[in-house]
Image (cartoon, rainbow, N blue to C red; front, top):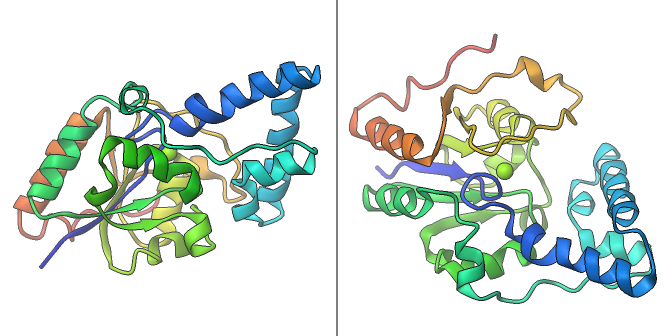
Length: 234
Ligand SMILES: [Mg+2]
């Protein structure tokens, strides 16, 4: 029987390409063009995102183009970037993990809080689209991590979920009854969740994608190991 696994994108497999290649340069250009302070502009967008998030509008909180439009600014969707530009943002070991996990028969479901129209161009540029058996994003499913429905939207029971954020990946997975494997290589956590995420611990912690790759292979190789993954909440 196939083993299905959830996997996050930004901060896990890639170092935030929408930010580095699209949103951040747009902020610089737009601030210059309109005589605005770049930091202040970004803070206004972030404040609006937080307001939407706290109001439960998780899809809207990720829609930077809509928030820019609220300020009278046009933020286009990203186009397909040169592969080399995205390659520089691939986290060390990501290609190897994807290759080995899929070769071992794992079915990977991308569970990302980024909008699909803002993620797809980068996956296309890397040739990663076919790697994923499923994609869960707020604009495709209407839910976002840490809502457990984001994991249920995978459509299959997930053996584990690999992600970097405590309040999105770990908390969301735990709420969904999915063992959470947290990767610590780029963690910048923000305690936005009302359920005190500092009390939520991952089932497994890995330092980098190489550890995650090996651990995943061990888990599927040892019968029953995946079923025993879940540890009690502290
Ligand atoms: Mg992430």
